[in-house]
Amino acid sequence: MTNPAQQYVVKDASGSIYGPAPIATLRQWVAQGRIVPGMLMATEGSSDWAAVTSHPQLADLFAAPPSGGPQANPYQASSATVGYHSAPVPSYGVPKSTNGMAIAALVSSILGFCFCFLGSILGIIFGFVARSQIKQSNGTQGGEGMALAGIIVGFCNIGLVVVLVVVWLCFVATIRHSPAPLHFAPATPLSPSHF
Image (cartoon, rainbow, N blue to C red; front, side, top):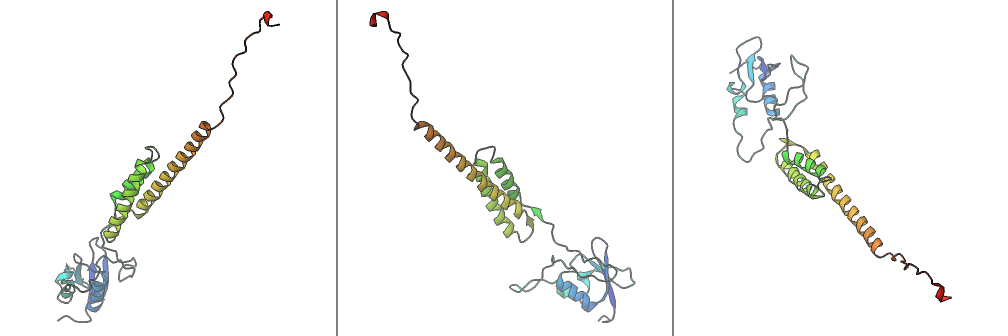
């Protein structure tokens, strides 16, 4: 059994050291997701670093939770400050990647100006697919704004094409149904015998 007054320090992957703190505080940090597997710990003043998962009073917190129960989010960011650093404890979440369909949606919609409205239709489809994929990624993918912009630009392109077609049809109909210009036959010169 360890001394409850014993102070520990924790080192993350970048080498930043947090603490000193008692084991009870470290258990809270594990529950909050501020200490994750892969970090090291040592007693204050010691250089004997060991994995946090190997400490007997923390190992149970890293065991798999029972199925069906709530799970702690190890990627949750915390803004608390501790020990040697005044900086926030870093988040160990996976960096967001931009969804490829979101990029395709925006590019297709913008190119819809050049290729009539075919690109706009593809941009709208890609945009809705991208938004669905981003929502299902649980925060690992970004690009929601690009997907939405692709949808909006696509609909605007289609609306513009529809307005231009209607204006053109009205113009053609006006020209076809306008009265025909009067055509006069050339006058025949009168001969002196007609007088």
